[in-house]
Length: 462
Image (cartoon, rainbow, N blue to C red; front, side):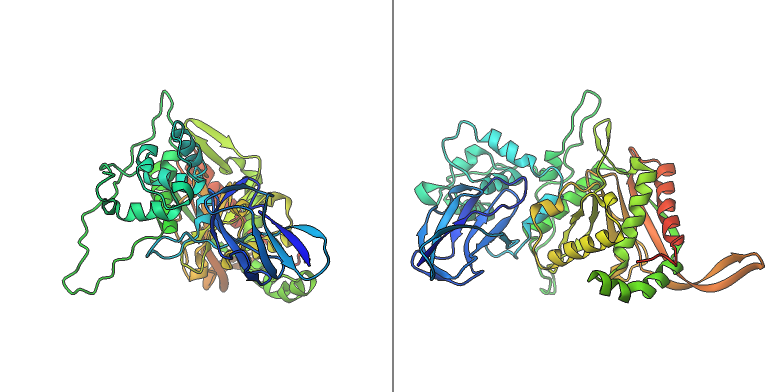
């Protein structure tokens, strides 16, 4: 019999440890290859650890609620074969869910594309000083998001090992604090969205505005005269998205500019080369990488659009990392990022776009796939919309929406005079932060993107 040592897998460059949530297999159980052995949680995602081999679990080397370092041996599996002991570091399988009782499953990776969420760990860690009770990173993050102090956490009974407070204990408490028999009396407090709290910037000349809404912003009846209305609680991911959208509108004065572009040459070129491209590169070419290439070229021409704001400071980004807003099967939104897009040719962009889109649809994105974006593109045309007014993905200062490409009659200027012809037309819209992006820069950048699309070389080789 061979003994395999299963290691805690790496879950992104910024993740060094994870908390064991639950063992899915007990000592003595048989495990199929790729079957989940345990569930783990970090400050960014909840995940499952699969087994790379089939065999019997003969030893669990960590307990539930224990914090384990990446690369540590977490289990030993006995399989048929020789006597050698091997270490196997398997890739993590992201479950994209937090098991909130009676709530839909969510994808916590959204937190990674909401800037500032990492600071919640720092805040929770600082607040935990002086408390002798252990709290996992996930518990501290949830507490920070919900405004629960360490003193309040200390009073919540825990069901974990040695009385530790588990994620489920905290979520149950948040759902029904009164069920604790009045031992903890939560104070009425205003609700500060976690991202807004993390990104507050205060200087001598500037102070971020206070939160604009409370836990229950409006008094909305929970029943209707007909009795047919359905009350749907937001899952955690939708709440994070909601907070991020409100924070963005509250932070940046949004201005949106529009242009209409004649992309006939581009459409005809793609139709001409798509089969050859797929045979040669093994990838289908969509319009998205073409749009990204045009955006990257325009950013090189006008780099101040590739920036963020810190109080009265403008941070011009050196890297050009393009986020592409992607709808998940659950209906929620995530923004995977193409890193260093300015260093990729059209083939490289196509491969990156297809890879990220496929992994987003199959819940296989890693934390590093959705961080450090500097500019975002959203394709409202994929839903049949001709234009949109997108909300800026903070802390970026601009976001581009591309509409559906439609055949329309258009006036074409020729040496012999103007003529009307059927052309492939589309609208582009750019929302930008008017604190630092004026109409001249925003409008010129948008026009430059449209120019690159309109001037597409029909004879371009693949």
